[in-house]
Structure formats: C-alpha cells, structure tokens
Length: 262
Image 1 (tube, rainbow, N blue to C red):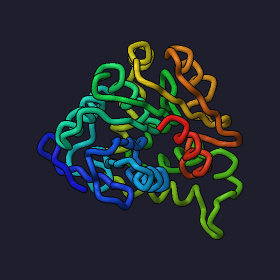
Image 2 (cartoon, one colour):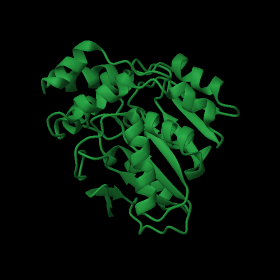
Image 3 (spheres, rainbow, N blue to C red):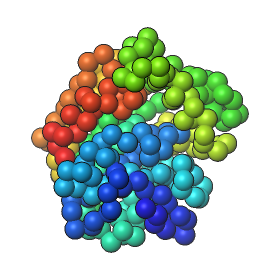
C-alpha cells in the first residue's frame, strides 16, 4: 500500500490482506536503519486476526521516498500525518528501538490519536556509542558490524535461527547494507539526542506494553523497567535469552508478547 505524507511517497505493508480502515488499525514502526520487513510475522498475524496493518517504511528507508527524519519528535509528528493521510482517527502503535521512541513520543504528545502502545527494546535514553556514530557518519561498513554484534544476543551469535542454514547476524547486516548513505547516521543521531521519553511516559493514558530482552545490550531490561514504572498500569514482558533484535531472535515469543495487549 502506498500513501503520500509531506509530499513524499510512503510504503506500508498490510500483512497480506487488503487494508480496511473500519477494522482496528495497528501501525508498526521499525528501528534505526531497518524497514518494514522486520515486522513480517506480527504484521501477517494481526492482519489475519481481525485487524488492519500498516507496517511502514519511514522516510528514506525501504521503499519510502524522502529524506530521513532527524529527530524522534519529527517521527512522532510524521505518524500523526500518516494517520491523517489514511483517514484514521486512532490507531495502535507498535515500535521497535527507534520506532519505540517515536511511538512513545506520539502517545505522550498526541494521545487522542493513539489507542494502544507496544514498545519493543525501549529505554528512557538511547545513547549511541561514539564509535558506532562515527562509523555511520563515514558510511563505514563497520557500523553494520557493530550494530549486529551488539544488537543480537546468544541466539544470533551462536546459532538458533529457526530456518536451517540461515544466519541471523548475516541477515541483519545485509538488511542494514540496503539503506542509502547517511540514513543510519541520521537515525542513530536522533536516538542519541532524544531526551523526552520520561516526559512522554508521564503523559501516556492509553494501555501500554514494554517488551524487553533480558540480554539486550543496547536498551537493557533494567532501563526499560524505568519506563514501566513511570506509566500507570503499564505491562511488561521480558523475553529470556534474547538481545535487542528480538523480532529476529525470538519471533514467536515477540508475537506472543504483542498478543497480550493488541
């Protein structure tokens, strides 16, 4: 499905079903340097279980046009414009990593447009290691290696892919290699600079779930727990033996977690 937001073409996968705005809508927001394909399993599941799905490519990512957005706040405002273009009053937001910050900020500042939020791999702050920022700024392939090395937990490093012969870390690097120069640096810089998570958390009034990997090095579970504590009624699910790239490492467990709130 294609939409136009801010004059640029936006691609959104619909989970293999025609988009029906009369059904409950879920918008999926990917992490830094990634695209809609990370949501293949949950998007397809919910699209075939009485929901409509928009697994979007953010500007400059995947099949979407435009320059990458340079702040988390801009991403949150972009989500509202996406809802406007799709003629949607409210939607559930599901975000991973950078997308989780955007979903949280949107729920905190545009609460009338958000009915439910699920944050995967989220923390009040997401500082980015200077070596990773420098490599991304130089468009150095080292950035892809660092992200996958730090992003995957035991399953990614030592095997554990459900499909025989597949390689999670290699697949993760290949996905990052597809992005245009400058996009990863813009994404990581936005995460590194964002300071509004706790303020947004205090303003969230809709049901909210935080999904954490217990071996996440990029957004440790103890940091995600601070967001849970700041949001009245927030739920949390911790996935054992799982790093930051939970959608690839533990796809079934990630889907099961999302089912608890969507």
